[in-house]
Image (cartoon, rainbow, N blue to C red; front, side, top):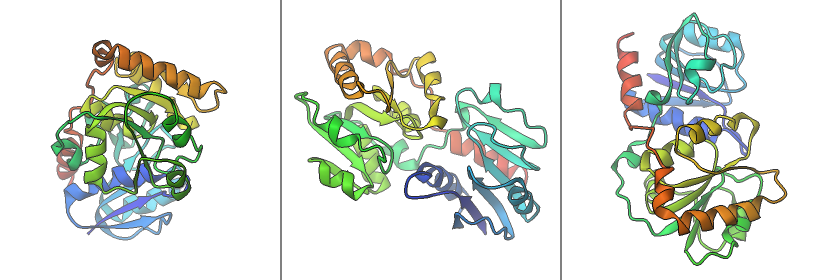
Amino acid sequence: MNRIYVDAYKNYGLGHLIRSKAIAERFGKYKIEINKFLAKKADVSIVDSYCAKYFHYKKISTLSKVPLFIDDFNRIVYPKGILVNFSLNAKKIVKQKQTSNLLGIDYVPIRKEFLEVKKKPKHILIIIGGTDIKGLSSKIENIAIPYPKLVVTANKEVAKQCRNVLFTPSVKELAEAFANSIIAVSAAGMTLYELNYLQIPTIAIKVAKNQNGVYEFVKRGFIKDVFEYEDINLIEKIQKSLYWHLNNYDLALKYTRQLVDGFGIERIYQKVMEKI
């Protein structure tokens, strides 16, 4: 039996759950422990947390044939196991000596539904995280641009405020919503990797302090514009950026360099199997 230990709360952590499940599915059956770190015996244990302490990781490591730790910013010193950090600057920031390190964009876990979907661009996608705790979706949807817009959210209150909504979609529906996008306005989290894989021109909004990695996407030629959610002129800036992308679409596509090749999960799987 394989296990996932993950943080997932109403206001954050859905991305942790999504990426951990995407990896775990490659290994077969698994059980999920949400917001609990009571270590149990397992073949492969995946830990994806901003809250777990070293002793949690150590206990899980001891009881697992292969412990797999997902990290975003070199959060702590990890015990023996495999460490995955797929951020663009991972090789610069990660200095772990006890772990086997899988670092960089080659290890991004893309869900199979995104690998299989066909692109049919027809709308502007608005996806400000799973819950949009900043309440930006309706304001962006109200920007006066003559293109259909689709808001994706798991927040009931946000859904009530918007006209064209995909509420709590299945992974297949979400992949289709992404693939059918002309342009995306997205929070600067896990969705950027999936948008990059599909090569969707994207305007990014930094809605959390741990999303500074978005600027690496700019440096590497995927994103032209990044905005801070606290900016008092945010909606005006998004509007100008949308107009630029739509009026210069061929040029916008040049800011959509594909960095993610879709083989991240398979690379992780192969490394884990070498340890079993």
